[in-house]
Length: 257
View 1 (cartoon, rainbow, N blue to C red):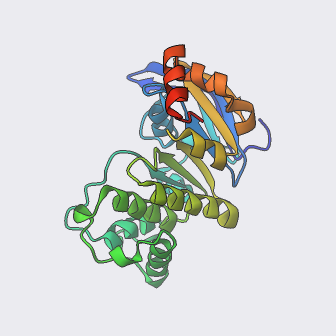
View 2 (cartoon, rainbow, N blue to C red):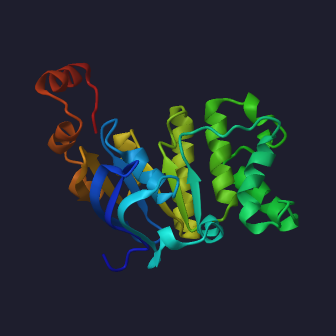
């Protein structure tokens, strides 16, 4: 696994010391995108929450640029990693600009007062994700899709080396799915940001990812490039698509991948 910026070594994750997914070995190079796919309940969110240190790791290690992520201080992690999970931020009494501004807290003083550089970072992040027009809008009053894009702007404003995204396109229509992923790819290409995310849209995962980790049951089932992983018969097996469902999909012209 040499050459990986991020790597998991014998990683087991779960709840209350009981593993949901065990013995994961995978990694991704700097400036690349790794997507986790698999059926509901396969443990994708649990893996991401453990990487993000929102859950305690059951066993194994996680390394970021050869440093043990689990031993880093919260301050050090916050300057390297931004996290966008499915839980919704409670943003009462906050404008969208305020929410994006919280991404700058790792760089501000104790009271979280934004300096001019921080304000520029907030403005640039919101312009990049095309939510600058929401700057003064109440965060609690915008749509789910708009919230998702504001939260991506918050992650970008944090200026991270790695971003963790859990089902980032869930609340977006097709236009904004593509727009969201184009921003993610732009960050990868222009800022060399590493991205680890879970996705349900298999076709999009296959197009944007450099590596894909397939989760099924309590272990990783496959890990490799999209070309190595995204085989039709394998995907049907991974998601438990039987002959009857396969025939229905073919009859209706539904594309699985």
